[in-house]
Image (tube, rainbow, N blue to C red; front, top):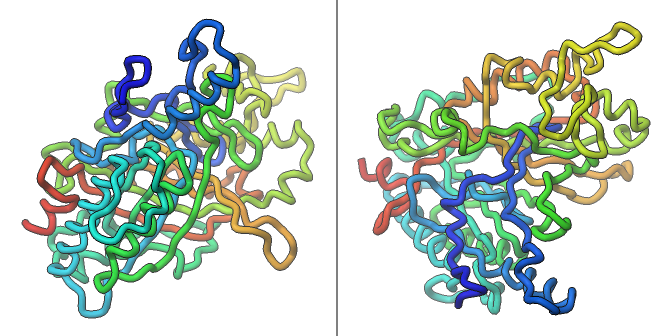
Length: 419
């Protein structure tokens, strides 16, 4: 059904990552534009306009088929689930192939707002697609489990150890990884449950994490989101409009291995924020750690959120305004040999620990054509002296090869599994 001439199919999967940017704690954000005042007819009440805007959220649809999988440049959704699986005992390439066929078929229907084939749980009944995206990836261990060691990408080598790591191996890595995002929590859970049910007998859950972002339309105008530290989080991420975006984020058509053409590598990190310690800092100290103003994300050297920081600028005391260990300085691409990655995280809150401290932070997800030229050099530099490190803790980690999108009639991973 059309809404003021706009098709139900908004083609968000091909709309790019509007508003994606790099910011504090390595976050990224990209939202579809909030409904504008022009969406309401002259003389209509503000309540009617609001209801109309909210209704449009459910109609947004992300395309399953395409050159790249959905969920990479798709504008970030309000809620998400990350889930890793290990193949069941005795399962191999045959079972993995059947599983990816089932998963792809389910994802295609769910992303179109349709129930899955067979016995659907009806959790998302009455809801539209709500920008649902489902993304699939392979961990390094998948290739030995399926006899495909020769097809394992060299870029899938284990990430190096970092001094700030406090990793829980039970919540790290995995044979298979699935990312689910949607702008409605029931739609997202419906997809999560369907993916888990389809895995029965072939794979078992290794770990699962839940996240959230600001909902579309929550602000009067589209804005970069904030993380749980209250910082604007997502300002200088690579943008699809940049000429080298594809080269930095996606494996080229002539890349190695061939089955990864159009794909990308996802680094997944569960980063706990030590919020009790952070919130003890005064505003000036928090801003000094980040190198940006908390109010609007502008650099301490002045300007607006998108103004380039003047890293050499000094204050009346003769010291540089943006400290040498400020997060904004260390994460600048030009301070890291041009290293770039597309950050697309979710915040999380898993209650309170035995000390009464919030178990909360960032489900950090970044995308790049090669993690050794994207995530690794930046994290190594952060590990050597980022002022923010005192207030965060890396508790889980994973690296996954995410193949290109499936063409019509194909399933995700077909070029690998049927090679």
